[in-house]
Image (cartoon, helix red, strand yellow):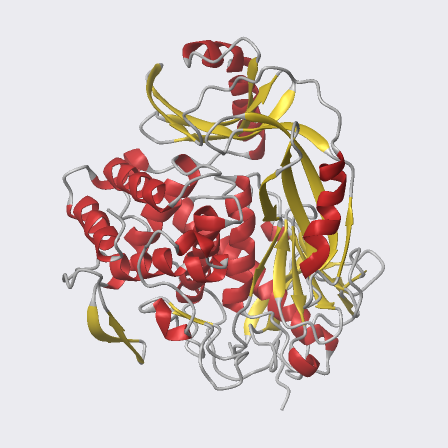
Amino acid sequence: MRQQSRATRTTTLRAAALIGSAAMVVLALQNGSATAAPEQSSTAPAAATALTLSPSARAAALQTAQDAAPAAARQLGLGSAEKLVVRDVVKDADGTVHTRYERTYAGLPVLGGDLVTHVKGGALKGVTKATGARIAVASTDAAVPAATAKAGALKAADSASAAASGARKVIWAAGAKPVLAWETVVTGLQHDGTPSELHVITDATSGKELYSFEAIETGTGTSQYSGTVTLGTTASASGGFDLIDGGRGGHKTYDLNGGTSGTGTLFHDADDVWGDGTVTNRQTAAADAAYGAQVTWDFYKSAFNRSGIAGDGKAAYSRVHYGNAYNNAFWSDSCFCMTYGDGANNAKPLTSLDVAGHEMSHGLTAATAGLNYRRESGGLNEATSDIFGTSVEFFANNSADQGDYLIGEKIDLRGNGTPLRYMDKPSKDGSSADYWSSGVGRLDVHYSSGVANHFFYLLSEGSGAKTINGVSYNSPTYDGSTVTGIGRDKAYQIWYKALTTYFTSTTDYAGARAGTLQAAAALYGSGSAEYNAVAAAWKAVNVN
């Protein structure tokens, strides 16, 4: 049955009813909270929280930092061939300024050379570096070796299709010793239809592969029945309404209509009533995606004073109805957008709330730490999306789909009614790691993420058996210890602080432990219960 609700019309924006479900959508669906209730974020001391910068103030801060970059490079003792390029500036209420830089060497990008400076009162208090090695190579002259040209073909072996683009000369600094290298991007399709943007790094002298990583970051989630909710839309000059959320950076939702490139068609509706709760109505998935983006934006704003994914007040955009029976969703930095398939048999679009939170958080990671999507840093990248996707779901406070620590519990991608991932005991999915070991980095990033997901659950809720919102959990520890949780809101404040000010592109689990302890010290004090809980939770997942 279809239900409708009308919201008060403003000049250009209007709230239309939608839901966060894939198979029952939008505007109708019975019970459910229409708005997200903010969680308490006041647990973070005011002195340590990041100030909200307007777009103009942020642009000014970036320019000021860039003007001062040469002096910063000299202060850090960088070589004469090195330059710093500002990526981000975070200003805390206590005056601490965290400036994130990329590096160049003789004009070449330095991959794995990023760093963050921490300055207070004009004094350098610390530096977080992706590598401690000094950047220096004997020569920057090199021709593209034949092995580099072949890299695309070699890497395409596991892809449905692929083609290598021109190589870019770089300095590869994420290994034991910085070397001159070539970066080749292999584009095409993976076997499940997901686009591929595989970056292959090869030694400029030998042509030997040094590293590779996938730039398309995937995630799967749950089909939810979230009830009647409001959706920001914009009145069209030609009449009717467009699915553009002008109140949240102008987020747009497009219909790919089975396509796999471009943006397709912007969703438009005559009466501002979107979808009818059935998968056959194309607006249903669109309303879900737009709702998910809306709640995620609100979560970032409420919890972290962050305006948009990149912190610049601008929205990403969403594309739905990708391909045919595509059973996944993904984030792409190249388009700065989320893309959703319609699921197996085109029956369950992956446009649910925690999926949106997960995908948008890949964008957050790209805009901040830039965690490489491979090995342990890739696991931390995926875990960050699970952590914030889960936090978004709790933040929504929707009685029709209460928050939980399960990933993909309703979409049933396995076909047996079980979730995709469990944060309290990740190994319950049959593949994820509960604890760190030397082999964790060799797992797929969706499974190596288990260590950080388990850490976050323990930090939030503690170990042992308990029931939360009707779901039973029983979280073990590596050493048999008992961990007492500090609450989810404090846990995600610590993770966000670490991600945005202490993590770099190469952060591994040992680095994540160090970064979250620094974050806990900044927010709550180095001898606080929160700081000690972070240490205990990492010890409980065998990160010491």
